[in-house]
Image (tube, rainbow, N blue to C red):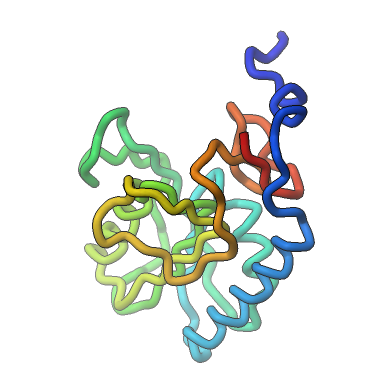
Length: 180
């Protein structure tokens, strides 16, 4: 069955914003920064599915600090703006109480889902939550008080995909970040 949003058509009109080499360099820098921030502490490394998968794998390999792996999968109900409207497909199973959580996602855009997951970790007793994102969009729509502690690259306020981010559930495994 043909896809109603063909990836090849999107790529033909997209701009390559960050190539694989630029992303590798940014991820290496983030790995060093996280190692310094953790100071040897074994944190819970919490990947946000599905978008954070590829970045999380590369980031973990860029770190020297041992971490406990876990993941979350949550979606926001359409039009919802508060954390209680989060729909959990998978909550973390690791013990968060008294620990540092490294929350890893592909992008910080408006930040509603990331904020809800961060607040969930804090509610479960996390001592601190460090947010690491591959990319960040700068615009005026961000949830108040929501920032990333570690950011790889900036992307324009456009539709971006690749390296974990999807174009209508396609293109997550592209080795760069593209914008339409």
